[in-house]
Length: 71
Image (cartoon, rainbow, N blue to C red):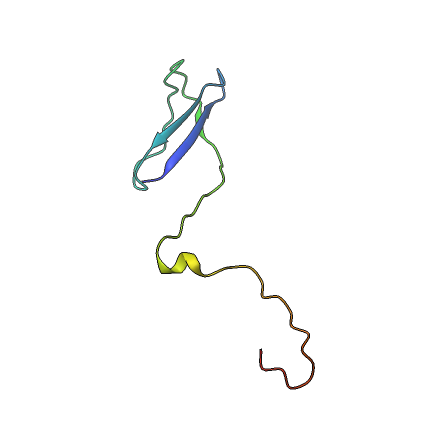
């Protein structure tokens, strides 16, 4: 389940909430009860585990072996 960040436009309260994708967005601030609790955009963190983690996503380094190089 993803963790969503919320901020209240009325009192600036910040909170993070664990929610299912199918759950409706929260709208009432738990600090001041205003109906101005808004979901914030945040960075995504992805962790790859297992054999796929050993594969690098970095661009390959160029080789300067000359003509006929099989790299």
